[in-house]
Amino acid sequence: MAGAENVHHCQQSTHGGGEAVSLEQVIAYKPDFILAQDRQFVASALEQPVWRNVPAISAHAIAFAPRLPFNWVDRPPSFMRAIGVQWLANLLYPELFPLDLRGETKRFYKLFLNVDLSDANLDDILR
Image (tube, rainbow, N blue to C red; front, side, top):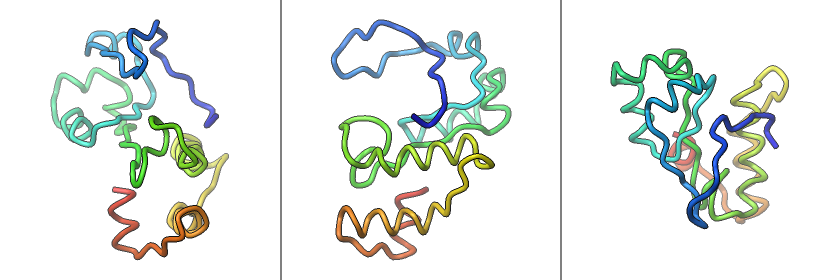
């Protein structure tokens, strides 16, 4: 929905998804962007020389999907995807999908969760 294409096409081996992909496969795919589900992976991939062969990593085009209170783009499927698709579209195509992410996130949390986010809360969610 955000206008991106997953370069890894496969048969899901489990109901939960999360298929393993080798570094060699990622290098062969030459992704322009990597959306990670693990914050530690992001830091590790940016630091390890072996990952520099991946265009997305050499361009620092990698991000960790926010997940508070639920994952914004993955499981469990929820209303959080409404903010997640905006976040991802803006991240991938900022000129086509301009977004005041901090303001929109605060409005979203107030509307759907009845929570007034402080700037510190917002930093925790978006880091």
